[in-house]
Image (cartoon, rainbow, N blue to C red):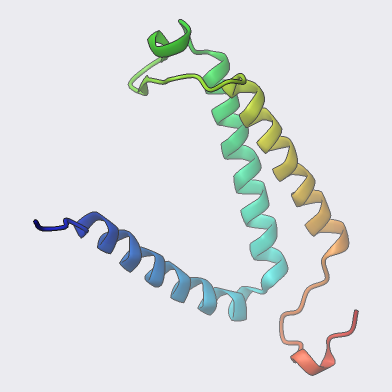
Length: 114
């Protein structure tokens, strides 16, 4: 019996490569700008997903989204509510990063104080 893990290997390779790129970017750009970009990207994307689910037609296993998105099975709670909640928390993380996180670019670990 053979175990097919080719898809998992592709994912692992991509994860390692993206991690190496992120390590290089952290030193060049800084942690705070990357956190701001990530939080804003999550808030926008999750908000778009909430909007997409709010435009869905049907219910249960017969639910479909407009366009080429296809069939979606609903969970116990509304997907619109769930993705809206996730988008809200991502927006909170954006404001937290903007106002509470200090930039550490070019600062040695020994020089960082709480």
